[in-house]
Each structure stands twice: as C-alpha cells, then as structure tokens.
Length: 462
Image (cartoon, rainbow, N blue to C red; front, side, top):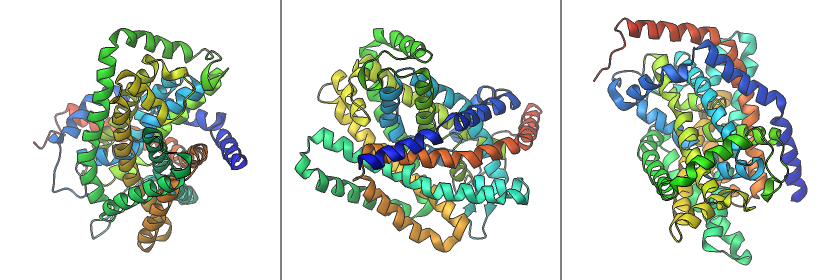
C-alpha cells in the first residue's frame, strides 16, 4: 500500500508542476486584466442578484440564483475548508494560506467567465433538463476541431467526481469519527464500512431527485452548516482577538520565506508553500476546475453575465471567509506545528480553544460539509457521463458513484487526496484553455451588460 500511495503522490506532484500552476495563475491574471477587475467592480451587483431581487420564475431553467449558488457552494464548501486547509498548512506552512487567497481572488474572475459562458452556450431539452458546462461552451463556442477537448473535459469530470466528490469526503468523515470516538484498530475496519454505507445511503436518497432536489437541499443545508462552523470559529477568534494580527503577519511572512524546520513540513521551500496553497485553494473553491458552471447553467436566467456575477461570489465565501477562519484557528491555537495532519489537526485546534465542545463542532461540520459535497459532485459527474454516453448512462453512474462513496471510507488518507489532486488537475486543463480561447466573447458580453446597466436597463424584478 505504501508503494501505491507513493506512486499516486508522485503523479500528483507532476500534475501540479510548473505548467499547470502557470496556466491556472496566468489565466486568472489574464481574465482579471481583460475584464478590468470584474471581481471588485461587480461584487456588489452580484450580491444584489443573489438576494433574489432579479429572480424571474417565468424564465427557462431549474434553479433560482440563490439555489444555483447554493448548489455550487455545497460542492465547494466541503472537506477542503477543514481538512484541505490543515493539509496545506501541514505541508506548506502558514504561508500556504496566502496562496489560497491568491487562488480565490483570481479564481473569482475565472469562475465569472466560466459560468457566464455556461449560460450563453447551454442547451435546454423539451422536458426542461438543462445541459451546460465547459463541454458545451467548448463544443458550441469554439470550432468543431476542438470538440475532443470537450470530450476530455467530460471524461475528466466523470472521473474527478470519484476523487474530489466522494473518496476524499467519505475518507475524511471516517478518519475524523475514528479520531473523535477513539475507535480501536481492531474495530476500525468495520467502523469505516459502516460510515461509508451510511453516507452512501443518505446521499442516494437525495441524488435520485436530480438537480432540483439537490438545489432545494443545498439552499437549506449550506447556510446552516456555514453559520454553525463559522460561528464556532468566530467565538474562538473573539476569545483570542489579540493573536489575530500576529497570525496574519505569520501567514504573509511565510508566504515568501521557507518555513522553519519544525512539524511535518520540515524545511519546506517557498515552492512547496506556493504549490500546496494553490492546489488546496483550487480543491476548496474549484475555480478553474469547470465544475460550478454545470450547477449555474441550471439557473432561471436569460442574461448570462448576471449568473456569472452570482457565481463569482463562490470563491470569496469559500476561501476568503471560511478557509481563513479555519487557518486562523489552527495558527492562533499553536496547533499548526504540532505534526498532526488533515481534519484531525483542525479538530484538535478547535478543541484546544473550546475544550469538550470544539472538536464536536468540527465533526458536525465535517459531516455536513462532506454530505453536501458528495451530493453536488454526483450531479457534476453525471453531467460528464451524460455528455459522453447520453441520458441512459446517468442512473448506472449514480450507483457506481455511491459505490465509490462506500469505498472511500476504507482508503488510506494519502491515496484519497492524491487521486483527487490528479483528477482535479487534469479536469482543469481543458476548461482553462477554453476560457482563454473564448475571452474575447466574454469581454464583449461584459461590456455590453454594464453599458446597458449604466443606461438604466437590467433593473430588479422585485
């Protein structure tokens, strides 16, 4: 098993090498420049749209703006916000958080672009089923010779759903509950199977209903789980308010200086800090991955730019707010160099600040976050397989997906994360290439929308 884990980890390291990171950051910088800081100038309008003021129930689509954002956030707000942040700090030091912020800031422009294109080039079947996402804006927006790129994305999506979508989620749930309950080695195997089976059953009850059911569940689940987790983190930060500024100073300092040779990240170079920050940032907010456009394409909207502005809020909520809360708790409590890795590091940090209570808030957060992510990623994987094989493949895919949810609880932590990193990286490539190729289209659409808005058009419906 150790040999297999090392093999996967090596592949993940190659996938997340200089070329992919340059493509990811380069695309974000390029779109931010071309769209004149859309993530700043469009932020307030995006919030107004999400509030429901622009909802029109008579438009084609399956979800309101808020439901579409919730469905996308239920996939992004997950283990990456708890275990992913901890893993980034474990391997890359506190400075990795700075690079997670970088991925989120430029990721906002990427997500705006991809989700705007997803609405422009979506297909709506006579029965109301929406087909949208990078495979469709590659197919319809680019020349026919690029259709293999659409197939590549669809294949990578169907596979990546098994990594980011369920293996990591069910693995972290099992790992956290074993740590919380102090399960013995003799009972660990059976306990993992029970956790995997329970999670697969709960998820199965939701995903059978399709995107409408997913959107409805997500619109209730996401606010509840976010408030519970962020509320607990805020209590800890308030009790340790004098340590907040020094923690930020530590993050900024170690973003450009190798971390001291302590803990699990002994002697890590700046490159490792950048690498771990960016790949955990992408895992958490999914900017550049191309997953969120599939959820946002189902929105009831006739103006693509409007949905892009809603989608743009995702990386801000996920990474700038929630991931930062996790990171500050880990750093403030001094657990960041304890040598503990993954979700247990976050749990120990919360528990050291709120003894007897903190750990269970993290466990509850993990259960809610993981469940929501597994539910939403089933839809993404399903859309990939639908594009490749048609409607008939959707139901069989759901059963295979649930099987992987069960298996994930039994996997080794390193193997689960490495597989997810490989799948995520390969999935991002065709999406990022398409965004650069279609940047002229998105610039023209954005200019037209904001010019019309200045002229008094695009007023709220409510």
